[in-house]
Amino acid sequence: MAHEILTISGIRFNPFQARYSDIQIVDIAHALSLMTRANGHIRTFYSIAQHSINCCLEARAREYSRRVQLACLLHDASESYLSDLTRPVKKQLGGYAVVEAALQGLIYAKYGLDDLSEQEKEQVRTIDDALLHHEFMALRGIQFFASPPVVERDHDFSQRDFAAVEMEFLDLFSDLELTRPAWQVVGVDGCRTGWVSVCLTDKIADVNWSQSIAEVWARGQTADYLLLDMPIGLPSGPADSRPEPEARLHLPGRTATLFSVPCRQAVYASDYTTAHAVNREILGRGLSRQSYALCAAIREVDGFLEIQPQARDKIWESHPELCFAYLNGQGRSFIPLASKHTASGQQERIELLLACEPQTQDVLAQAAANPRLSRLTADVLDALALAVCAKLGLHRGFSSIPEHPRQDEKGLWMSIRVPQIIHDEFTQYS
Image (cartoon, rainbow, N blue to C red):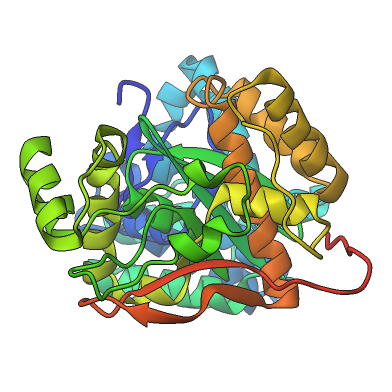
C-alpha cells in the first residue's frame, strides 16, 4: 500500500491513479467531517465538512444555481484523500497543486461539474473566501480581510457532533446530486491477486483491481447488478444440486471451464488433504487441487454475503464462458469460443466485445495503463463480458440455470444467471 490509502468504505485509493469508481461520497463526507480547518489552530473543533456545508447553504441563500451549491459542497472534496495543507505550504509544493487539481477535477467530473463556467467558479471562490473570513472571526477573533465580506445568512460555527455533520453533508449531496446514472452494472472476475471489476453505466466505463470482495462492493454497491465469476450457494450434501451439470450443456467442447464446486464443509477445511477427504465423504467425489485453489475466494464471497445480506439482491453468480458464448450467439443461442489461453482465443474475445460494447476500447486502454491490470488481460476481458451481459440482462431480463434453482443452507441461491435468450435481432444498449 505504499502508494495507496485505505478509505473508510474499504477502497484502496491511489491519489495518482484514481478512477471514477474510486470516488465515493460516503468516503468524502466521513473524512471531511473528521478533519479540522486551519490545521487545528482554532479554539474548537470545526471541520472541513462544516465549512463545506456552510458554503453550500450560503450559495443557496444567495439563490445561486444548484450546480454552484453542489460545487460549494464539494469544493474541498479532494482534501478527503490528500489532507488539508495550509496555504503557505501549498504554494511551496508545486507538485501538490497539480495532484490536487487533477483529483478535484475528477471528483467534479464524476458528479457532473466538469464544465463549470468561469462565472460559476468565481461564485464558489467568493463564497469560500467569505466563509474563511467569518470562520476566523468566530473561532479566533481575527479579521482575515480588511473589509468583511457580506454573507446572506447566519452560519453555525459551533462544535458539532461528527456523525451529525457527516449526515447533513450526505443529505445535502443527495438533494443536489446532478448525475445519477440511468443504469449501472458491474462484472467481477477473480484473479490470482484479488478481483478485477468492470463498471459500465450510461455515461462511463471503469475498470479496477480490488484486494477483497468487500472493496468490490464498496465501489459497486450503487449498481443495479454485479455479475460475479465465483460460486454462490454451496452444497452441504448430495441432494443440494448446483447448476454446473445443466450449464455444461451450453458449452460443448468447453465443459471443463465449469468445475465441480466443493461442498461447504470442504471449502472451510483447513488444508487440501482434509478438504479432499471431506468432499469425497459428503458428495461422493474427490477435489482437484485446481478446485481447492479457489476455496479461499469462495470462502471470502460466502462469508461476505453472510455479513452483508443486502448484497444478496445485487451480487449474482455468472460465468464468463457462458457470457462469451451468449454474445457469440448474438443473444439467440450459446456458441462457445476457443480457449482464452491462446492468442487467437483472446483476440476472438476482444473482437467480439468490440462489436457489441461501445466502451470496450476505453476499458482496454484503462487496463493497459494500470500496472496492476496490464498483465491481467484475460481477467479484464472476463470481467467485461460479465458486465456486458449484466447490462443486457438489465434491459432484457435474466434467465437462471437451472430454471428452478435451489437454496443452500444459508439461503443463497445456487444459480448461474445469464441474459434471456431473444428471438429478434441482437440489440446494442449504450
